[in-house]
Amino acid sequence: MTPRIETTNEKKLVGKRLTMSFANYKLGELWRSFSPRRKEITNNLTGNLISMVIYKPTHFADFKPTNEFERWATVEVTDFDNVPSEMETFILPSGLYAVFDYKGLSTDNSIFQYILGTWLPSSDYVLDDRPHFEVLGDKYKNNDPTSEEEIWIPIKQK
Image 1 (cartoon, one colour):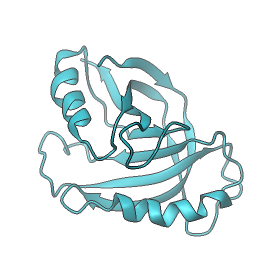
Image 2 (cartoon, helix red, strand yellow):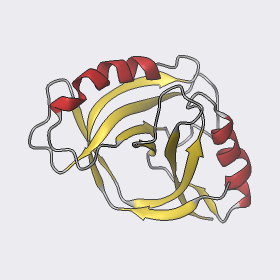
Image 3 (spheres, helix red, strand yellow):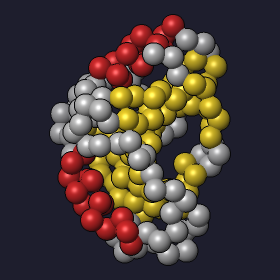
């Protein structure tokens, strides 16, 4: 699987976040708290959902399943003028990304093992210390093997 390399513009995001680890994974809890209220965000740029992760700079260098990270359930918005109560804002900085078009179950972690363990080491890039995210568009279907999403991995030249 070969990614396309893209530079994103800055994105304004609104949503909810939770701190978790792979050992104490709370992704379902996060989306259950966000999804019923996402229609309260009235200035969406698209109908896509963005599932974003902020890892500490040492997360992968000293990987343990108990390493904590911040996971966000968001949508991209035009501005921060009307942020619903109990939701937060985040500005995703512009930058270079490897974008993988993924089809399959979102619970199948082998795609990330391939990206970080096979593709990245043999590429001309290294991980950059910026948020990782997935774009969940029209073809995304939760817990469905025919689901499609884009996986955006922050990179920089070696």
